[in-house]
Length: 126
Image 1 (cartoon, rainbow, N blue to C red):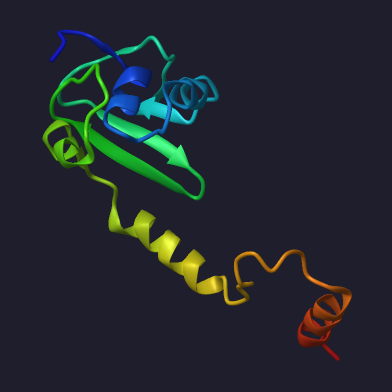
Image 2 (tube, one colour; image 1 turned 180 degrees about the vertical axis):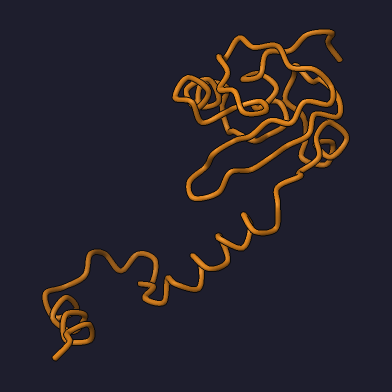
């Protein structure tokens, strides 16, 4: 445990992002905020901060329980952060999953012209 940890490093350590460079890039693009303020990657976080991470279409909220500077196994993450994302945000994901009614089998390639015509006929309104 460290006394001070950068926000990008903590997000990577608690497995919110796969790599630290992806975490840094997300912070630079303004997708990460603490409270209502967008932060820089070098921003030091404190225990008790609520970090907002916007991963389209949902804004996740994580409460910092402990500081971590090194990446950890997924079983330890719950000791370092608490997911406090409102249920309304998570319902957006469920709705989006249900809307994806047309699923192609993995590995079948691009849709053919016939597939496209069938889709156009299905959505055509007279």
